[in-house]
Amino acid sequence: MPALKKQQLATIEEKFERTAFSLTQERSDFFLPQIIDFVTKKHWINLRPEYQRRLVWDLEKRSAFIESLLLNIPIPTLFLYERELGRYEVMDGQQRINAVIDFYAGVYPLKGLVKWPEINGLTFNDLPDVLRRGLDRRRLSATVVVVDTAKPQPVSPAFQGDDVRKIVFERLNTGGQHLNAQELRNCLYAGPFNDLLIRLASTRQFRAIWGISAHPRHGLARPTVDEDELYAPLSENQLYSRMLDCEIVLRFFAFSDPKRLRGSVRSILDKCMANNVSMPADAVPALEKKFNRVLKLAHDIFGPETFRYRDHKDKARLSRPLFDAVMIALDHLWDHCHTLKRRRLAVGNSITALLRRERAFAVIVGRPNTAQAIQARINLVQRAMSAAIK
Image 1 (cartoon, rainbow, N blue to C red):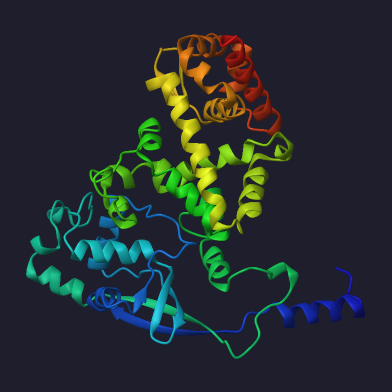
Image 2: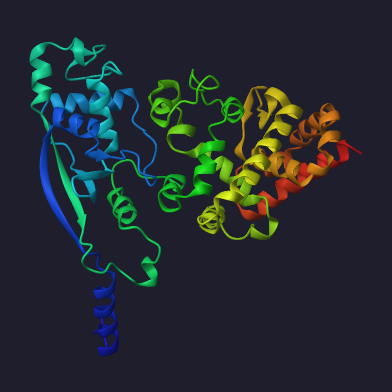
């Protein structure tokens, strides 16, 4: 490898000085009851900072973690961020902490244990005293990250706008269950637009169409985020737990403007999030209204078949590409919304006939996931709808 030139070396040294974060790290061990006490008394705050993902551990993973504690197996270190003196934000470890808190609170019974099958089906209060005392003596280690506010943080353009917490969080998640693309967007582009995606994906109609269980309280009193995710049929749904429901909503906004359909689909979605990260709060209601009214129109026209096609066994299957095409075509044809609704049978029959054509089906529902394929499927569906209402 050729030696670095003097100017290159000077540039590297200067970059190192400008980009190294001024941090200190402290290591501590905590008994499980201490952790619960710290969370209850809000010393450990914000278990769900905006850059965190949703809870993704199902009942068996939570149970396996409790079993690991009983077996005294080493547990990965938690990472905390000291936001202010004596108050900490959980950067990595929310799945483990929530598993402990909820088990102690009797939220779930143990399930699928291999080494301790005798206690499957039991909650914390059902356990023999010796096991409860044993858990009380188990510890979790935590590394506390403290930002040295007395020293300047990186000013390089490569770090501009970045939050040290988000960068550390992203780097910590290089192992285990990797963040998918939308979970990363949720980390990196927090703000009113990201909140809008989450809110739109939480409406009763959206969840009903996509087969995502609504919380029993939904419609009576708005369930909190924690209540939502502790509701097993919801937390075990892959669309919900991995934030793919939010990505579906994002696709509508990202693909609506044909001028932005350039490059890979992932880059289109990333750019949409980046372009809207600083969206003013007063711009959100119009977007919310737009999405909800188009979704309602789609359901008014297609009913239980909304965003569904029939496979070779005549089974209805949901399709994200079909969602893209139908939603954006309806948005483009919004001036004809009353005619579309009045002619809904003709519109539905037109789309059904279109999907029966092998070549059209391959474009609309098939695997192509490129900017060109997205524009092509939107055009096909929009022309079919236009023809049906003439």
